[in-house]
Image (cartoon, rainbow, N blue to C red; front, side, top):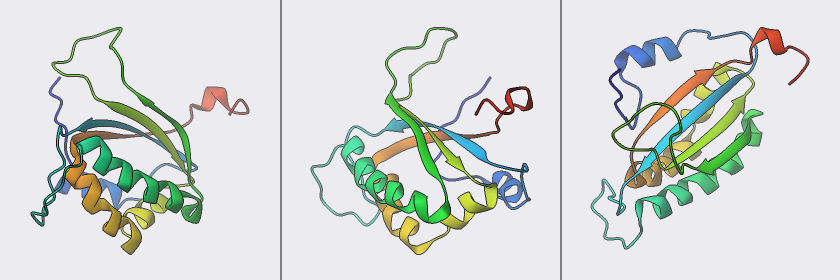
Length: 142
């Protein structure tokens, strides 16, 4: 299994995201890897760590979620891996619930998100964004 942290979807992923997606809510599992020091694309000087720059993005993103009927379900630092092997652990994991894939896309293409994304891009080496759905066998236990 090859794992590649990225900042944005590649062309194939963009095409998939443009499709309607699963019916009902989606849960985005985010695995984040921070840069040691934030690096802004516009070359601005900063003493921020990657984690600090990402926090600036995160504060805006958290405020945007209710506007798109989305909610943060879980967020935590990654401390260890108990099964499996990876070269390097991710630093943070979160799960965000969106009412639909289109809601996620609407938020991620908003002006507010775009402005905050400057800090996200400055702060992270990359991430895995994994779309999941609630399993049918657990219906009613959400």
